[in-house]
Length: 154
Length: 154
DNA sequence: TCCAATTAGTGGCATATACCACTATCTGGG
DNA sequence: CCCAGATAGTGGTATATGCCACTAATTGGA
Image (cartoon, rainbow over all chains, first blue to last red; front, side, top):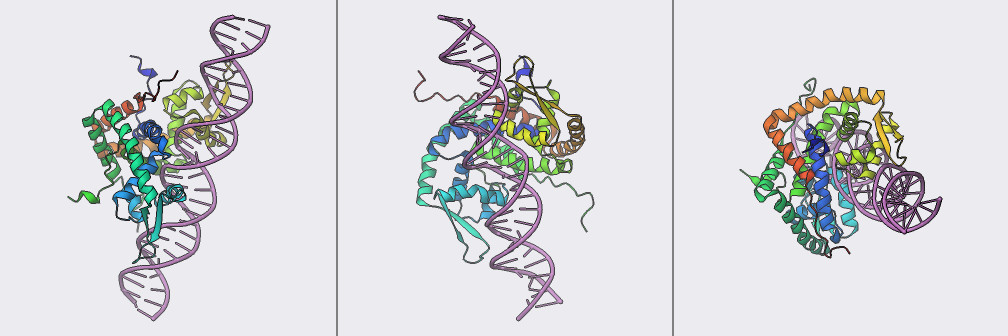
């Protein structure tokens, strides 16, 4: 086995994680491409769907994503009429998000494609190992990395 | 335990992987920020450094990254004089990449910051588990997802 | 009641990444 | 020797993401 020929084996956890993410995203993207959605967009529609007209901040937290990044990512989906936003009745700062009927249809359509990718992946690595991997990744995403600032704030 | 309050627990391997990548990247990015580099840039400098004036295509393969994406990512590093490119002597299609002296200095400077992030992460999840995670991710990045096209090409 | 501090989003800007169409080279027949 | 096909990169365009500065609302005191 010529390990030198293998992907860049770096000891960096971050680099390794990103590398895997690039590869896996491309796979899922390819499979659901016929729907016209990217993996992230599909995930976003899903997250909106399972929430109860979630506020943007809520979605951002759930997806462990920057709020402004979420705003940007949402734009194409709004433009294409898959989601719509509206102000919260009790707090006008809050903007809530929901799927349009087209958005729901697109979500359902794409879920069929997604299942294919999901099954294919789990067939390759094993269902149990996939579940273990997700558990580990969920843990990584939930970690509190907090690094004490050089000087503790006043 | 109120699981509903936890990060979006999706069964999607892709979404989970990306979520973790966002979070971890932000952590590494924050820690090495004083160097002025982003995590990906650091990883790229490292990859170039350990290679022997690697060709762009080689780097792209090692990083499991699209060649054109690599080209784009390289630009800020060239602009800031951390890396330079030159044509391969035997095949003028091939463009090779190397670090400049400033690039090497920056790599070394940033490595100190990187170590801090790396150690912090491994202290949180455990060295062995981090190694296991990397192994799993390397495997994911190396998988051959090949999906048979609907109709086998002629 | 009123203002200072906090909270939720927006917009601008920069990097990260991908795909596609295109250009410049090579390479292997014929 | 020459061209058809394969290879390596480039540039354009679009989404993915993050940070920062800024605006709009809300809230908690004094």
